[in-house]
Length: 383
Image 1 (spheres, rainbow, N blue to C red):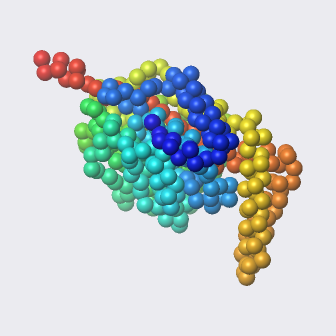
Image 2: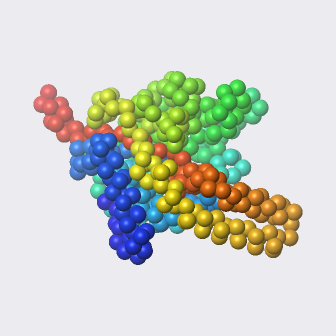
Image 3: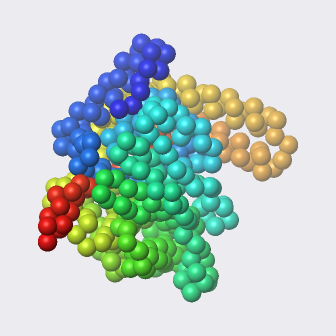
């Protein structure tokens, strides 16, 4: 359960709005039969690409305190969750962890090098220490020479963002938890950029599949694969290397039309048991509860205030700029901000994008697994 003591410091208007949002999230999850945390029987595991968390490079942020409460509320429902798009500065992560409390911890990578196409992002895991034990093993996947990613126009690449794996245990279930943020490039299937995307998925799945054959732990591979649809080349690259994915009938982008994010498994025999295996609705559409399209009027004045502050900052930057590139940068910002402020319709359009930088343009995925195999072990000992 997150800690909400700091809500006392918000104005009454803001406090009541935030409380209402938190309560709507809770009601939505309950209505959608999201599982309750259990002390020892099951593990609630997930993945979430939290958009650009949180360096404001796209000038839609930074995230408000309100958004941090909502993100913490969602993450608190998980025992462990992989997170993508964590930015270089970790202060936002620390702020999030303060809301989650001392019972939670996190592990993240260093930032990817921008020359690889990784946008100086981190990958990481947030977990409930009461349910999940870190087993002391951490690694990033660096491909051996013979597995380097090659396309028609390039040979010998590593990943744009190096996949990250950590060994955890919950109850009787020991698992290597790996997360990825696969190169996006282009959504057009006949391009080198799309080929690179598919090759990255093939490489990580093949690498971990080989590791699974050599080890005694269950392999779980999750994250933002930028998979367009079930049955696409990217999706098939997972399956042909022995990874089975959690089925969802709706996607994980904001309008749930794309299947970018996936939870996949390559388990040891008889060591992976789903709770409610027939479910196909393991996606949390948080925009049903917070930053709803219908809430535009609630946030209109906040957005206007933010845009006017950005406008003043850009005007000052332009006045002080001494380079051609600097003037171009600030002129582009001024054009964009003035365009957003031009009308009610443009403000509403800005809100639709702004809210994805407050929450995300990806939705969290989840699955519940059984982790108490004591009865089975006792039966085994009788034989």
